Image (cartoon, rainbow, N blue to C red; front, side, top):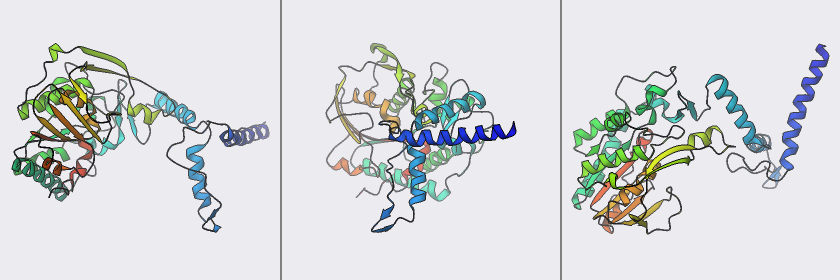
Length: 353
């Protein structure tokens, strides 16, 4: 009996390997490969490729047939049986997912050094002084990590750090330098009692969280806020969460969103493709001009600000092009960045002349 089981195991093992190997010959079977990988060559520059074995292992690992389905099945088992995600996604309580890159911030590991905090603050100071010298209002806006707003849904095995976070330390350094910023953590913490402010299955805030960030910014800079009572609320269940995509690459899964109808309030004046375009320009029914340097958290902010100003320019490149103020005489400059990326502020002012 033991012999038969050994034979069956070997047949199953080699049969599985053969299936996924030969399956790569089926058109479309390996299209869901992770990353841009190609079949390595046995020869390189006229001589045998000494790295062929390692390159082939990497190629096969990312390109074997039906890879995404296998990854999905494995992820489903881990989530269902153990409540575990993968190296990019943390599975929390009540269907919440969290980006693993924010875990160090949450538990207080690998904090920025004092020198790094001061360098980031000095960059923001340079932007502030540059904008002020040109008569432009300035504000720094940091989007808090989701687990700093909804920490109660993190797995119990992760204990939140009770010491000042990197963002706490950065704000303290900005206070010393007199750089204006809007701390979104309190309004978001207060607002979550009224509505869900971050997507459950995505890293970012949803339409309601974006509204809180927008209204806080309007109060800080002093421009008129939109009248949300006059806008039509739009409920959607077709938002594709980025964390779901990282956890289940072979499936298309959706999350809820709650936003507003901005039709007729602004138009795109750039060749708009997606909210992740490197540059987006708009024309709206408000007054004044806004120059905003931003990351993906501002995707949900774009319609709000675009509807509030006559002109907006949203830039996603780093280092930030503050020198655009020479040709784009904005009334306000906003630098928005996610909490997990505040180290990217170091040297972000290198284009300032």
